[in-house]
Each structure stands twice: as C-alpha cells, then as structure tokens.
Length: 323
Image 1 (spheres, rainbow, N blue to C red):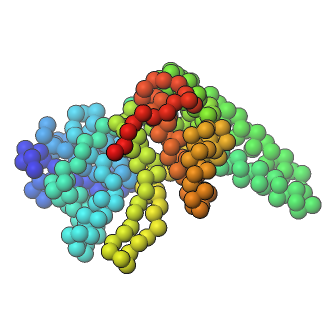
Image 2: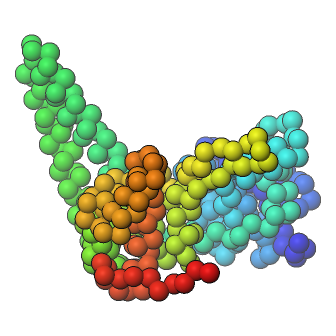
Image 3: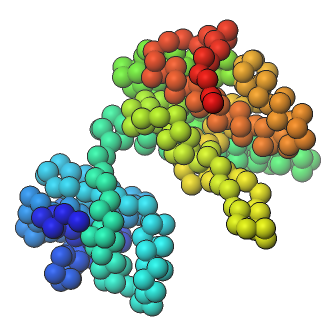
C-alpha cells in the first residue's frame, strides 16, 4: 500500500455527493459546479478520488477532477458490493457507502481512470440517441401494422404515426451521417480494414470503432472479448458441482449484441467462422453456442486486423504451434 496516496471515497446521487477521506471524516457537497469547487479545496496533489459509475450523475464530477489534474478511479459497482458483503456490513446509507468505497480503495488500490476524449464522448452520445430512435421507429412501425389489422383504421391516427416515423427517419439519417464523418476523421484506415472482413458491413464496422474507441484501450484480443462479455465462465468443484459453461455477459451489451447479429452473416461468408460453426454443431452443441463462438472469433479477427494494419486474408493460416 502506498501511504503517500490519500484516497477519498465518493458516493454520488442526483443532487449531492458524500465524501469520506483518509481520516474517516464525512463531507457532503451539491452535485454541481459550486459543490465541485468547494470539494476541490479539500484535495491535494496526491489525492485520488474513487467512485462508482452511477449513470450520468458521476460523469461531470469525474471529468471535472480529471481536468484539474486530480487522480480518479471509477470502480465497477459489483466490486464495491462484494467488498461490502465480505466485510459483513449491515448499514446501507450514502455516508456508509462513501466510507466503504474509501476503505476498498485503500485496501485494493484500483487503477486510475483515464476518461474518454471529447470526440469519443460525442460519438457515444450519438450512438445512444440512435439506439433510442431505432426502438421508437420499430414501435411506430408495429403500431401502424396494429392499426391496419383492426380493420377500422382511424386515418388521422395512421397519418400522425407516419409523420412521426418520417421525422424519426430523418433524424436517424442526420445522426448516422454525423457519426460516420466523426469516425472517418479519426479512424478512416481502421474503418476500411474492418470492412474487408466478410460478415462485417459498413454500419457494423462503424459501431465497432465507436464502442471500442478504435480498439485503443485494449492490449490483447482476450481483454477485448472480456470487455464484450464473450469470455466463458466455468463452474466446477469436486464431483458434485459441474455447471454448464456460459459466457460472462459482464461486459458491453451493445457490443455483444452487435457481434451476435453479425455472426449469422459471418457463418455464410466468412470461411473461418463457418468452419468453426460447423465444427461445434457437428459435436452436438447448440446453434446458439456456435454463434457465440463465431462472435468471439469475429471480434478477434477485427482486433488483429486493426492492430496489424493488414486487410483480411481468407487464405491466412496461423503458424502458431501449441505444444
């Protein structure tokens, strides 16, 4: 443990955030600019602020601290929850949570959070908005179908739905164009390389780069697959416990769902993915399990191609020898 570092545990809610320092002293500040400035007066250059991601509420404080040169750790809430359970804590308040977060940081020394670039934050905001618009578009199309099935369709209702649907489609088009321009400026070469993989189209390549920040944050394909929640969980103990292996799902659900949808096309047009799918199904495994394996392989192909800067080569064969 580095005794020179002063960890501060922060529990954030919509209006306020609670802080516990190294001396177990408790403070509370408003979750806004004035509160951030008051909190800053407590900090030193060797301070590290530790918090859980709480939707949108933690983001402003985290980036404010990062911009002022203060170390920040954003810790997975499950880690904090398990730590609290391990300590058999019976109290659950904002004050006690801040205290336990500070204690966790002191004991475990979590890695520093680096945040995301302004451009990446913008891209993710656009992506989230596109996801909402896409769901709304599907709802409106289903509503039109439902009204037509009734037989006694109210024309005014259908016209209203169609107008809304048309406006939504325009907004989707505008956002998709803006997202494409942003990605092309930063990752044009990577975008071209990804589209060379059979089974990955333009929109998929675009979303892969946005959701992974151009693969820049990952040092290995294994790390990337773990981030997507595609790595297996095995539960075996002695002779009595032998659970079915399954994927962890402890990752980015949007990335995982994107790859799963791509796996259908990959099984048709990507020889390596098709061979993997056929081999797993031939062993009597489920088709869903085979598609998940294909998703994993597709992500590894994408990572390798972008990192090496070489287009997809269907004739490539690994020369790696495993003893």
